Length: 167
Image (cartoon, rainbow, N blue to C red; front, side, top):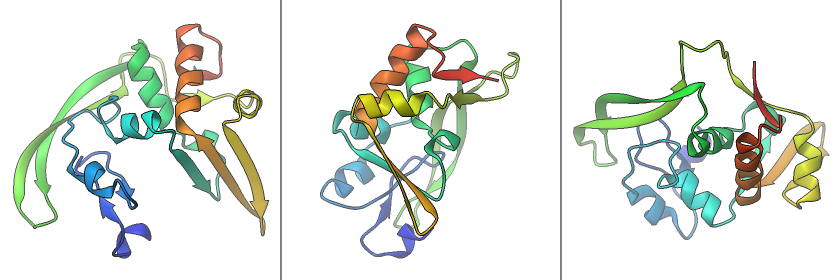
């Protein structure tokens, strides 16, 4: 990863779903002990609480907006389950330890292939001043307020509004 080659970036602890972070809260995020990838006690929760922005370069956010899994887990959708994983983790000091993590995964007994975000989400995010899109030099750039987007997706899932849907 480009960011991890830079000395000002570090990787968070979760071995399944980690973040490359920098900035004033880098140490806090890198020392955050959490074992549930999409829980509100994870870096996602911190980013939501602090109105962080998610920046997408070269792709439409709807094709990779993992924040929807946080909303799905909060709501408790019936097409995903919390699955336990265990394995070895090597920390920044090269120390190896056994870790256990939970990930909210697709339930293989359901007929759901994946979660999708409807194109109408753009207008809802814009209306809520949570989305900016630009094309620079032919490259698509998306900037999204994670707090507002999370609340919109959570409400949508609770009310079966169709902005977040499955195929």
